[in-house]
Image (tube, rainbow, N blue to C red; front, side, top):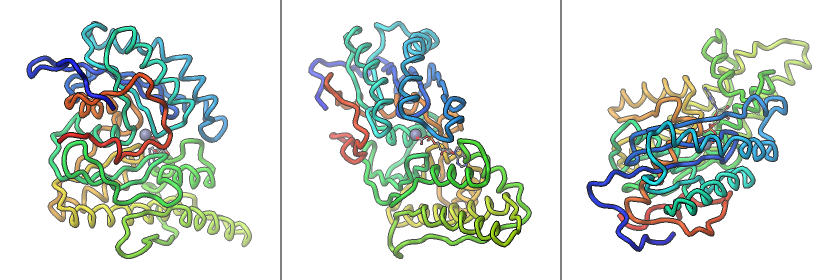
Length: 353
Ligand code: KG4
Ligand code: ZN
């Protein structure tokens, strides 16, 4: 990160950030005013393409991003009503994500930034998921974020705005990944998370499955054992010639996942004195998780924030919201910034308070 040399912002001038997100299988471009107000947020999903392969194929994802990115940039700018020369900065997801997919967004963002003479802000994908909450709510610190997506399962403590400390993470599969694998075993198409969620809510019976707590004081998660337990239950039933209700398995899996997520998140909020719990990432769409967290937080008098669905799954508006943290502090990226699949959230924290 470098500092802006000229006085790029005044107290009164609004900030318009054009943001680009291409880290996985959604191409998205947004224009966000002052880190909160979404002027445009276009999302092109590749799910239909990847469905045929049962998961995201990295090379295909990159090619699809290339196909649509230019047109989406034009349309997002047009829809925002902001002239390109009035943009304050160009933000782009720098990592984590699929390297080839990230690269498409980065090249597009750099080209636009150079052509327009605007600063570039390389942005962390998970900071984006967390700050999606700021598009609809006022945030209070210290805050705790529970990040649950296809690639991430993390508890993030924020002492103050833009300061991230990872206090727990998955040691193997991410929650969304586990959902997708279980869904596949139950015969559902990709991405299977929403199918498992629906089946769980319709189930009349439940197949009990183990809760994976790890060490008593740990905020880490582990999903692969639970996923194997699901596969074992299905295989054993098959060998005995029995048929298990898929919905009962889905419910057992969901209950096991949700109980551990809720328990650890609430314990973290208590230990760190968090004023708010922010739920974010694609799995924040899960009805079982939302309901259990809402119920628990209400009972314990904790404030829970959940972004609207469109800002839970991958989108560029959330990248614009996170990039604004850096913009406010004049912390911008060099033009040789590279795609970084392993970008650290803690290191991406703002440097000044
Ligand atoms: O955040 P996201 O859009 O992409 C990543 O950054 O990974 O999350 C996608 C993940 C997929 O694994 C999908 O199955 C899961 O979120 N997902 C759900 C639900 N809706 C989406 N998982 C469980 N229940 C849902 N309702
Ligand atoms: Zn994501």
